Image (cartoon, rainbow, N blue to C red; front, top):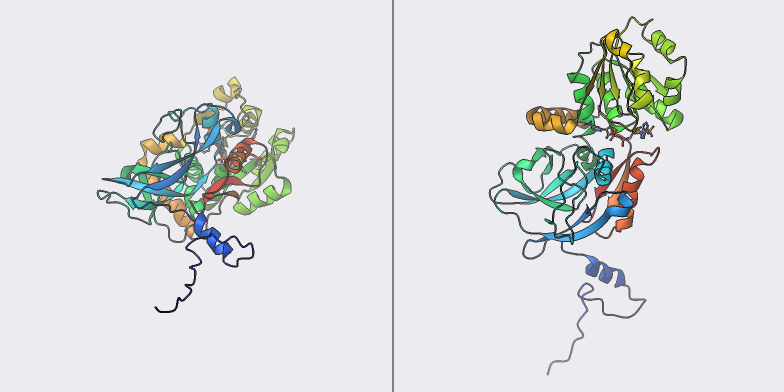
Length: 397
Ligand SMILES: NC(=O)c1ccc[n+]([C@@H]2O[C@H](COP(=O)([O-])OP(=O)(O)OC[C@H]3O[C@@H](n4cnc5c(N)ncnc54)[C@H](OP(=O)(O)O)[C@@H]3O)[C@@H](O)[C@H]2O)c1
């Protein structure tokens, strides 16, 4: 009989050794923790934030684990790379938004539920044999809002998404392009024809939409008055650097001298303030209306103050102001081709370094991330001044 040769233990085969000083222990642990994202049979393990009733995010959000079957025909299985936490997403969870996703049992939740989130950058993980427009590894964004994006993976029909050329872009940039920058772009272009040197005014100027409007306006030669609430001098400097001609705080705008101040900036009132972008409402909107020129247009796209606007009759009769609204979801549904062009144009600017990202607070979402960490980030979205827009950034999911 040949002598018995002791076999070297494979460091990754098991972690049964009980020795606390075992040098291979970290390797053992990692090998055990590592999960297969795709099973032998092509099933993908996924986690989704879900809610089964409306209310405060911390009271109603849950983290649900489920699996996704392999895609067939024109289906795509997507891995989420990034997804922002926009104010409208929170309003949907609260049940106060104009459109609310239906509660269903499609994810196998114990009670019918919906997945929050409306915008994201996804990577194609696998595609059914009938899918022609995209391939594994490419990046896509949703064609319309309402997909439910706060989840690690999802399966969609090919025609629910649009391919994005990912070269030169970060997932967070792609994941935040289709709501805020598109809203700013369309509001500046579609309501009032501004000529170079003409002014627009906007409140909520430190928001994602506001920052995009400042940059696009500057690019197109428009002057702007940016009204921002919190953040102090740092925000003021940042908005000026982005291209705002003048930056004022909410308090300064509500102060007595504001009308005179604007008159001075606009060359004694000879330069028109033709357009106002309003996401605050209430008195803050009306203070803007007072400095708008005859025949100008105010586009309302948000109501952060939750206060209604009280429009004086003289603003309509003598000043002939126009008050309109804009909703990017409806516009995107009605203008799919134009939306793609707008998105591509903005992504090109980002690629060339000519459009700065909104400051972001990245919220890592890995397979082991606790539900509480995700829910806390969501809960914080509507609470006071924040350093940046919350964005889920997905890691080892
Ligand atoms: N209609 C549409 O199609 C459309 C599309 C996109 C966004 N929106 C709306 O536009 C608004 C901004 O969205 P976003 O994603 O750009 O925002 P964001 O980047 O998340 O920032 C939120 C902004 O809201 C401001 N804010 C919060 N509470 C406020 C209050 N009570 N009064 C005045 N300002 C307040 C904050 O001001 P500070 O920085 O001073 O704290 C911040 O600038 C939201 O109402 C959103 O629903 C509408």
